[in-house]
View 1 (cartoon, rainbow, N blue to C red):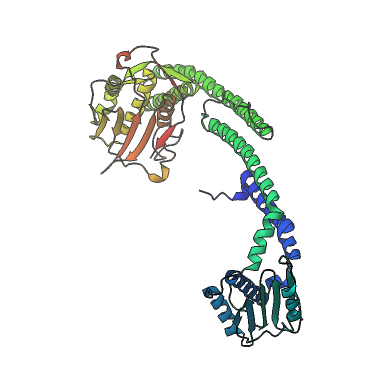
View 2: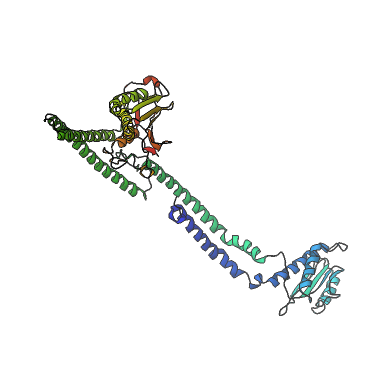
Length: 488
């Protein structure tokens, strides 16, 4: 089965274009603004490490404020240790109330910035709600540092410097910024594209369902019934010209087929009368070796004309009516073929598993099909051989011969008209074609396979009559023509 590429379907093309639109929209509306908003330092590992140090110190100050006896947290110790290990010159000092932390015995920048004098003034101020804050960047070339002082209810101060090398942290500033800014820029765009994609998908799926419904109707057409056409109601306007073109093609094919059938039928009818007159005149001639040969040639031509007429009659029928007993019809056919088998010493045996088996169909046509199968078996069976005919309880009619069997390379054309296997075999190659046409008309199946040991088996199955009491009653049932199914 050929691989179906997405770009070869309407739905796949729409999906690919939607993905392209989403990618372009996300870049224009989200990624590009994010790259413009974020500073270069947002992607600097050293800046990320400095942010981690500041966040950890602030979190520890808030935790220790008002709790002078609380132990230092493990996270604070881990972050400070990691910073010192990668940065031997890293120094920090923290004061929360009267408690101090760090690897500096005294602050370096507290006196330099005049915070000591401001704090003394703040202590003397009788306004409890007064707050003082001061932030200072202590960074130098190749080193990051920071100072922060807050004095509201109680003083809090920290400073650190000498951070020159990044260390592993759990902060992904880029990811955080993308998650925050991405949705603020692109959420409406993505929701709009998703809604449009869903609506268009529903429209396409509905029209695809309509097109597949028309395809199923087209697949159900039979080659012998070109009077049917594809439905045009409910078809999308974009597909309607194609459906109308197919209907016009079906109409032209039906006209051509009708002309061909008329020509073949008329030719066969016109040939029958001259052949009958010719045979009668030949029989009036004096006895001579050439007389028997001429009569034989005329007999074969007459047989060909009769087969063509039978085939044309089957192909022009749209339905069959009536029921027959398959057991009785098979016995009747075997009795009629007895005179052909007896001179060659061939025995025809019949083994039905039931006394009667009613099937829906035309007795005349079904008997022609059975006769052609048995006649085909007789033609391949050597003199003195046997032909076995069996009918099981499920209505499967089997005809077995003991000839050379079926060539697998030619099995596909076994039921085609004017095909003979082997090619030098006498006849016109219409017998099995008539069997196929009869079975197709009756809604049955026919199959051919090589038998175990030697010979071939032809199996014919026809729909049985659900009401056996109607066996032999005329106009009791009707069978429509389905598609032909032959297996090998």
